[in-house]
Every structure is written in C-alpha cells, then in structure tokens.
Length: 173
Image (cartoon, rainbow, N blue to C red; front, side, top):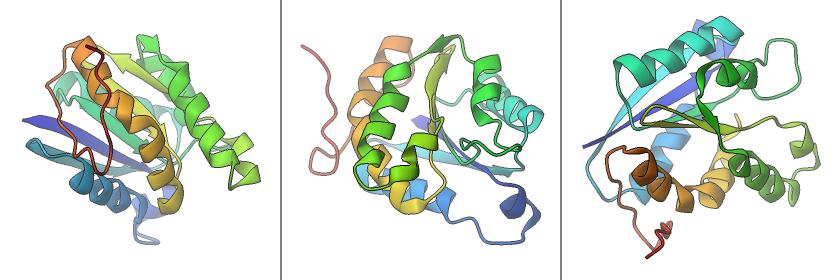
C-alpha cells in the first residue's frame, strides 16, 4: 500500500485561525486519481525553514512515505521558506516539476511567476511542492502527476496505479 504525506504549510491554518482547504483539496484529487490502495498521512505545520525541514525528514525517514505533496510556503514573502527547506532535505532535485507547474499556471494566473515550487527525492520518497490555492493545486497535479508513478518506480518506492480517465500515468515501455 502506497503512503502519501499531505503537508499543509501555513501559520494561520496551523494555529486554527482558519480551516485548511488545501490539504483536503490534495486528498480529494488523489481519491479521484489513484486506483491502487493508498493511505494519506496528513499534517499541518507553520511556515518557516525548521518546521518544514523537520516535517519533510520525518515523512521520509520515520514514516517512510512514498510521496509527499506539500502546499504553501512557496511564495516570496519572508515566512515562505519551503524551497529552502527542500534544498536542505532532498538528495536530487527534479527541476522539470516546478518548471511545468509554473508554465501551466502562467496561462491563467500572471502572478504564478512568483512561485518557487520544486520537487526532489530523498531516499525512496518523492517530494513535490504545490501551490496553496485549491484551484491551482488541481491544475498543478493534473500537469505533473502523469510522471509521478514512473518516478516512484525509478526511486524504488511502492507502485502506484492511476485512473487513466483522470490522469494517464506515463511509464515508458
């Protein structure tokens, strides 16, 4: 069974000042897209380098999840330090993920150019940073998820199968 970490990074949501909409949006998208058995491992943490770094390490090294999808903390504000924490945690960066998400987002949102989303691997875990807005999350997952199952295969994670009507995973022959 595939284990997927869903990490919401938000000062206000972590304090309970407002309801987290982004983490549930990720989970709902995954429920539609994945047909193989999987288990969500959700967490909400405050913004900040150390908070994000620690959560990512815990997901990868202790929980041994196959995939971590983060939401939030990728903008240019002072507390947005998700990419910096990612660089401290990952072993290999996969720049195509961030490039593809920004390209897709720029078609509808001019401020997508401010996004610093990225992806990388740590051991047998793929980590992908997503935007914080639910509608943008759907767009970005639709854009990059076709490559996720094959990436998980390549790094030795558990196999994931998708519904080809929602997202056609690409695995070269």
